[in-house]
Structures are given as structure tokens and as C-alpha cells.
Length: 148
View 1 (cartoon, one colour):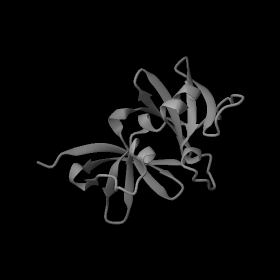
View 2: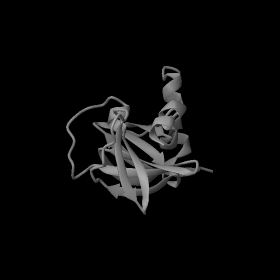
View 3: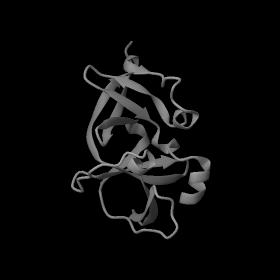
View 4: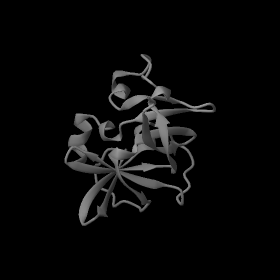
């Protein structure tokens, strides 16, 4: 039997990433976060989300992938981290599609221990490789202390 996982495909620069759609609460149109003083560079600020304060981080800043951003295409992906939620700014969201688990390879040993915390695997497609992430694990415990 060929099991499939529905994935949200998004990009940072020219690299594509995926997240299990079951771990995504919502995709928001980008809104400028309210900046916080003395915040780490990847923490862009906070927004009002359903009457609560939602911290918003930039995945491109977290990954040190800086390039030209098109504001109309920016999105905020809301994911759950245990009982908390976090917004993650991505350059664009392209699609939701089923991915066969047979097409997902374990992250190679060249990935550092840090990236193995949030890289679930690599998705092979005929014309690209998509990095399968766990966005709820993107922040280290120390970074979570700074954000929440």
C-alpha cells in the first residue's frame, strides 16, 4: 500500500519546503508585525491572531536566506508548538499536494544536529528536491524562551 501525506509546499528564495498539512492551523495573508525591542533578528514581532498575541518569525532570517521579497506573495503559516502557536513568514505558498511516503528520504548525515531537529526528510520529485520540515521544531529551546 502506498501511503500518502498531504503536504503544504512553500518557498524561501528559490528553495521549496514542505510541512505536513495536519500541523498547519492556518495560512494568513501577510501583515506587518508589531516589532518588539531587543528581539532576536528572526523574530519579526507579534500580530493579533483570533484575539491572542501571536509571535511571528521569519524563516528566511532563521535560515540566513536573504533575497528580494514580494510583499504580495508573503504568507504567515500558523503552526502549533505543543499548547502554543507561532506564525512563520514564508516567501510564498504554492500548493497542497499528496506526497507518497516512498518519495521521502531521511535527511542525509551531512545535515547538522541542529537542522536534524526540524528536517524530517527530503522529498524527491522529478525536477526538484523539497525539504520536509517540522515547523513546530524550528526553534531551539533557548530560542523558544526568547519568543514565548
